Amino acid sequence: MRRSVLLCLSVVVLVASARCGGGGDAPHSDLSPAAAAKWNAYCDYRAACQLTTPCPTTACLAGAAEEGPLMEFVDCQLAQTCDVNDDECIAAAGTTDAEREAFTARCVAVLSAPPPEQCALTWPEPILCTIVAYPIVRKQHMRAVDACLTLPCEQLKACVDAAVEPLNCW
Image 1: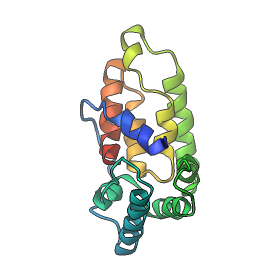
Image 2 (image 1 turned 90 degrees about the horizontal axis):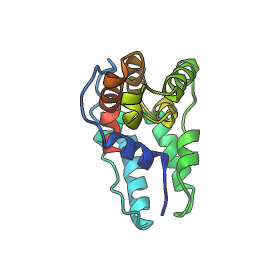
Image 3 (image 1 turned 90 degrees about the vertical axis):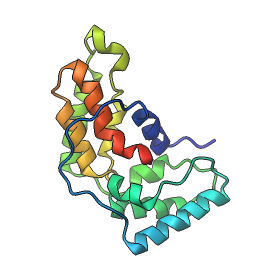
């Protein structure tokens, strides 16, 4: 069975329990017609591969993903055989920038530090930093997580969960 970063991200956000400040970027209602057609072709590919996880809607992706990197991901995946893990395609989609790299370093430093004892069981995993900083993920989600990093531990987990909750549809 394929394991992917997207699936991992879905598992991370399933535990969302509260809402926190948003990212400030305007909401996106849907992909462009060309991107939606390409995404639908990818969903057909997934169905032909007999993947059991549902294919996200184009409206979900419009709010969660940057369209250009998403199309790079789709092109990469469509060039693969069904049994190939999609982690490499996700990581290769888009180009990182200084903001994403600075966030990742800052986020990993915070989430890698030993949390206070009362928060140890609910502390977010540092891999979350890398996932939300991928160029395929809209920056608003990364910025929302970044806003959580200075909160006390009791509030940090709920804030991070809320910041990535919109990605749950993926």
